[in-house]
Length: 344
Image (tube, rainbow, N blue to C red):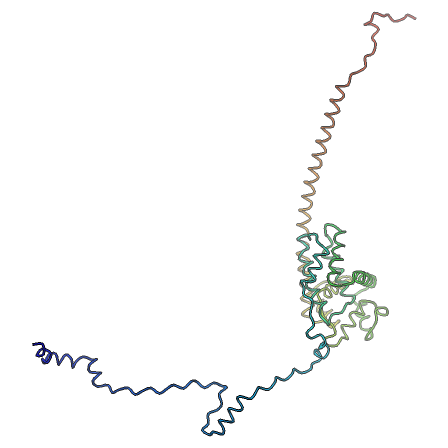
C-alpha cells in the first residue's frame, strides 16, 4: 500500500511542482571555477610573452635601488655644516641652573614673566645666528626695570637678575655696562636723531664712532642671510629705545621702525602688541597685589598696636601694684604728741 501511495498521481504531481526538484532536474552541472589571479602591483614587471623581456624584467627588479641624491649645498648648509650632529643644550638645563642659583619662591605676579624670559632667551642663545648687541642688553635690563619694577624686595630682585643672566651663560657685568651705555647715549635724543645717525652710519661701524644703538641697528641693516637672529629681548629693547626717544608705542610706529631698521614687520608688530597687552595685564595684577599687601600690612599694624596697648596696660598695672605695696614714711605730728610750738 505504501508503494502504491508513492506512485499515485497526486504525489507525482506535487513532486513535479516543487521548485527545488524542478531546478535540480533542469540545471546543468556548474563548471569548475578557474583560479583567480592576484592583483598586479605597481612593482610587478610588465607582462610579456617573450622570455627575453621577462628575464630582463626579473634582472631589473632584483637590482639595488640607486642611492638618493644629496641635497644641494645651500648657503645655510655651507655656513653651519660643521655644527651638524653636535648636541644642543635643552631648555631644562637652563631652568635647572636657575633653580639652583635662585631657590626662593617668585611672586605669582612675576613668575610667568621670568619663565617666559628664560625660555625664549635660551632658544635664541643656542642658535648659531644669534649675537650679543646693545639692543639685546637694553632689553634684558628693561625686563627688570619695567616689568619687575614693583618687585617686593629690591635686593632679591637684583639676585634674580644675576641668576637669570648666569643661567643663560651671559655676562652680568657686560649686560649692565652695555645697558648703561645705551641709556647715556639716548639722553636728549629724538626719533629723527636715531634715523639720521643710522642713515649716516657706514657698514661695519663701531660703537665707539656711531654709538651702541646705531652700531647694533646698522649691523642688522647690512647683515647677510643667516647672519643675525631675532630674539624677544631684542624686540623689547627696541621698544624701550622708541619709548626713550619720545615715540608713541603703537603698532603703526612699530611698522615704521621695522622698515627703517630692516626687521620683519609682522614679527616686530606682533612683539609690540604682545608688549602692550602684557604691560596692561601686569599693571592690573600689580594693583591687586599692592592692595592685598596694603591690607595685610594694615592688619599687621593693628595687631602690633593692640599688642603694644596690652603691654602698656599690663605695665601700668604692675607699676600701680608696686606703689601700693611700698610703705610710706611717717612724718612726726607735734600736735598729736602734745608738744606745743615754741613762742616767739
